[in-house]
Length: 566
Image (cartoon, rainbow, N blue to C red; front, side, top):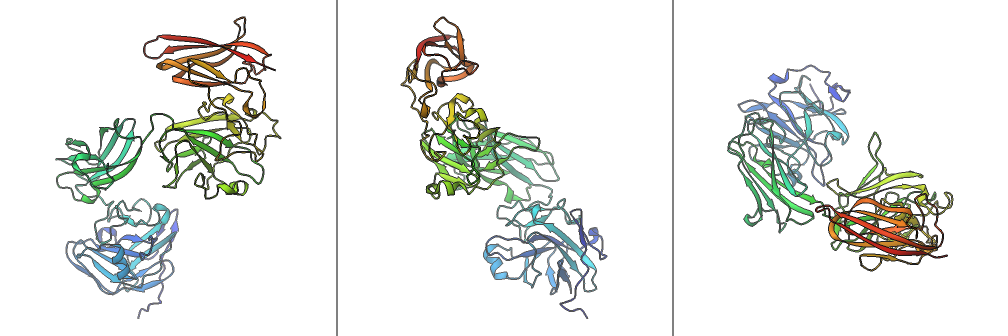
């Protein structure tokens, strides 16, 4: 006589697969299988598993047991309609609060074994201990909150090859056909993404047969109500037949849509489609900004032992920007780059404002006033800057590099030991981050000015054809006053710019720009040195600009006298 405390030999994991040690019938002949499992539900949803009757007639599963790696419990007789499902859970009332269980499915309250969140194995057995079916999972094959579904009911569910995270929009398919199981006819809206100035919708034929009579529509959800309204239509297409497993890309013009984050809705239809739940896709997409709105303005790469690395960003644009999914990373190696991807959905940076990103909580010990200020964000990450030389790259959610630099220890004005615990600050946020002469050592007593104006900050010269300030200037003067900032405006929208410092006799001494691609205006910083880094003697010098229009090859030139004073 079997008792509720009876245990079974369940088997073991070998190389990521679970091997059942007890005998059993072949999968091809199995009537009942463990079809879906929810071992790590979100919120207050109870754990559950789903049994599936594979036969074409109603069957009753009699005197069976369900076992995990530690315990076994008996099951009541379970009636499952032809091709139908039974959901087993400890709390049917709680499950109904979280799941819409179809009337055709059997819902039973059973004292299930407690399922491990990391990995576990389940075996469905007859009363004589013969294995009917088994399933083994690792949560790493999916993630918390998503059920694990069987891909092919005719194959073992003992590895990630045949047990995967659900693709259902509501995180499970309790009592329904699995979202990943292969059907004869299944059109899926695979993805929506922005590429350059187009929104690309990808359709996929997930079915076993070719599809005909396909129609696809793409909408810009302007009022964010998650409804596809007629006045929001961007694209409607009726592509030709799709072979089994084929993908099809459709593109809509996005040139007139706003930069940044916005929501799109895609709807696809096909004749005989057996899985309508994956026909509609709602996605928040990101359109890269036409110009760099965010700039790296300060960074700490060699802190003291009790300090933290950080990067300060400056929003020089007119709009508030959401920073979710933006990335910071260092120089890539063979194994990739250490990357911090901002995960906070509500993190924003206001116009003409700062945001400090740090990955070490010690940052707030040094700058306690920034904790909870809304302009400093901490997220634990593996990012770690080298103490002598490294790259810092800022990328938007599309992977576009918005700003970047490669710093050297020599960018500091101080000796190597004296610069420890001091950040590098930009003389003006609009200066190109790639250029060493845009940066200098922070002069503040705290060693950095995160979230505030840089200690060496300088205003740009007034607008004009070619202007400079300060002029005269003294190279090496404290607080950034020893750097001359040169500003130019061109009669072209885009040009190749050469900017050179000459002696009074016309000898070229310092090439600040060398046929560099530029917009219609730009700036450069001169420390009063020649190309070899030697500080030039006091006296007058000539700054000459030469620009060539990218489109017409027209040229523009101007010159300006600069004076180095003692």
